[in-house]
Image (cartoon, rainbow, N blue to C red; front, side, top):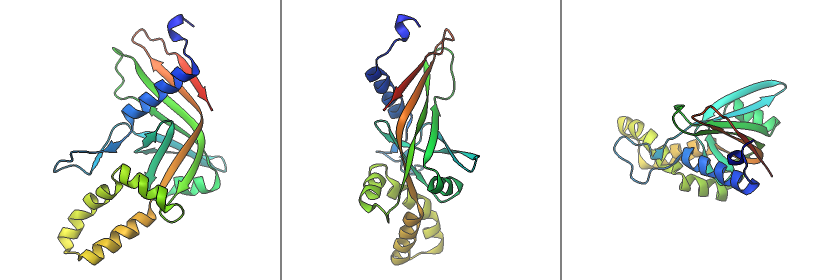
Length: 193
C-alpha cells in the first residue's frame, strides 16, 4: 500500500459520508413543472434474504451520515426484512469514467422497519425532510384531476398510501469504500462500528 492509499478510520468515515451525500436523493427545493418533488441521483441496491433465497432490489435512498433511509412499498424485500434484519447495500457512481477517481460503497448492517403506525414521529419527520408528501401528491394529481376526486377522498387516498409505505432504516456495522483510479489502482478501505 502506498502512502497515498493509507487513511485513518476518521478519514474513511468522512469519505464514505461525503460519497453518500453526493449520491443520495434529496428534496427538490425548486421543483419545476415536471418534477415529482425529489432530486434523484444514484440508486442503491438493497440485498435481503430469507432461507438462503437472496433478493436484490434497486431503490432510491437518503442518508444522514452513515445511516441509510429508504421509502419502500410492500413486497418481497419487506417480507424478507420481517424475517431477517441483516442486509447489505451497494452504491456506485455511474457512469464509470476512467479519467477520474470514482467510488463505491458496500454497507453491511441491520435494517429496521419504520411505519407511520409504529413510529409516527420519526416517519413523519423523514417524510417531511425528503418531501415524500409532495411526491405522493405529484403522483396522485393526474388521477385526482381526471376523476374529479373530492378533497375528502384525496385525503383518504393519501392517508391510505402513507400507511402502506415502509421506511427502511439501515444501521451499518461495516462499510467498504472502493476507489477506482485513472491508473487502474483500486484501493479498498473498511470502516467498522
